[in-house]
Structures are given as structure tokens and as C-alpha cells.
Length: 202
View 1 (tube, rainbow, N blue to C red):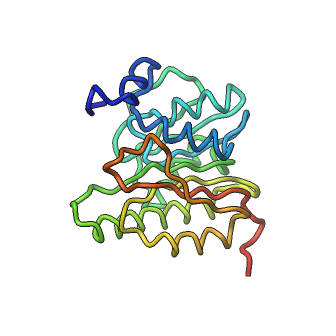
View 2 (cartoon, rainbow, N blue to C red):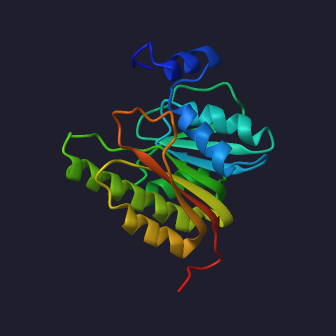
View 3 (spheres, rainbow, N blue to C red):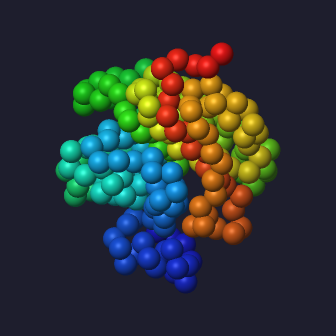
């Protein structure tokens, strides 16, 4: 964590042993929507440095497990129900192979806190965020079980209507949510899809 030490979320994360303040965004999503439950199998995309993994591990308990995927290696965590993989989520062939190696063929929940390297140009950053989230939904279509949930992070400039339209074909409920832990200077927000259908609505 290399942010303003006066930030209350930074201080709280440090005190509670979390690797990043972003954990409180997921905590707010969980408190509002109850996307995680005991025993769930969870896939966390863009998982480094690992604060989402820490929170998910506690939420799902020892009967569940969470797999964290990132382009960079994640410093090992002590929890036994956490597995980490180094992979590019846009390379579906490599991702599939690595998931097969650990015996993970479906998930109850998929979370993503991924964001592209930003340029400061809203429409460029938004476009890249859109592409990443389309990839997350591709992965969800393949690996998310019926009734499962998905959480996506979007940057300013994303045409959220396009993503929401796609998500509404696959999920019973789709919600836009901005946790209080998001910095006031940031325009990021989340889309939460709950209750995946057996097949897309027509």
C-alpha cells in the first residue's frame, strides 16, 4: 500500500492486516448484495496484491476456496484455501490450462478488480476497461455456475449500458454500485450481476 497514510481506509487496512485499502470496496459490495457465502468456489481476477483474496478467504471459510489470477506473481498468503496463478486473463487457452491443473472447472462467484494501465485520457482508459470487462464476462459465461454471481470494476468513460445489456441476458439481477471506499477523485464504480440463468434470455 503506497497511498496517503492519512487515508482512513489505508489506516484501517494496515491495522486489520489487509494488503490494500481496496478490500473495503469488496466488503461494501458483500454487505449490500451478499454475493459470497460459506463454501463458495471463487475466481478473483486481477488479484494482486491480494486484499480481495484475504477477504474472500474469510467470507467463504475453510469449506470453500478462492483462486487469484494476475499478470504478476502474488506474494504467498497464509490462508490454506487461497490458490494463486500467474496468467493473462485475456489468454483463455492458458487460463483454461492453469485452472485445469488445479482442478478448478467451475465457480460460484467471479470477482474482478482489474483496471488497465491508465493514460489519463478518459475515453482511452474507459475503452480499455470495457475490453477487460468483456473478457471477464467471457470467462463468466464459461466457468460461472447457474445461480452464480459476478462483480466487475469499471473506470470512467466505459459505456456501462453495453455491459449491463449483456449482463441482463445472463443474470436475474444487475446493479450499479459505488462503494464509499472509492476515492472521491475517482470515477470508478462496480457492476454486480446476481443469479446466473441456465441459458441467456432472448
